[in-house]
Length: 169
Image (cartoon, rainbow, N blue to C red; front, side, top):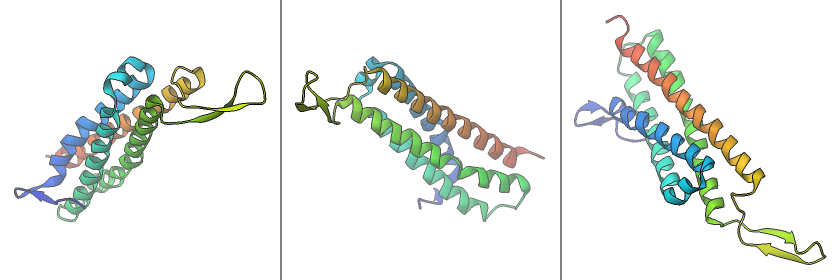
């Protein structure tokens, strides 16, 4: 998947720069949107779109890295970096998924059936609000878990890649 070279240069180090910027940026925006509804109102659909671009960039970087691994000398550091590289994808998917859910809830696209006035009548409520305590807490916890996890993985994988390239030089 994705180009393996760009203008004759291996694509992996070029895609990595996109990942190193967009994954932490989307994670930070996700946490900010979960914590502050005013940020979510301003961000809107930008949040899930940014997370989607970060996810696609992570996949492109991984694919280009696998191609590059076959063309560089095999070392323990390169092997470790390659193994770690696949660990970012689930975190990127998590950031994207939580971003979509947060946006959907914020936009009020979910409906729920509730009892009206404590009686026997049921009615559809057109909006699940982020102002309810349980929904807010769940959104903040989910955003923090996937956001911190994604940023930590970017750091770990990037550190192992830098060591693979620059160690012993």
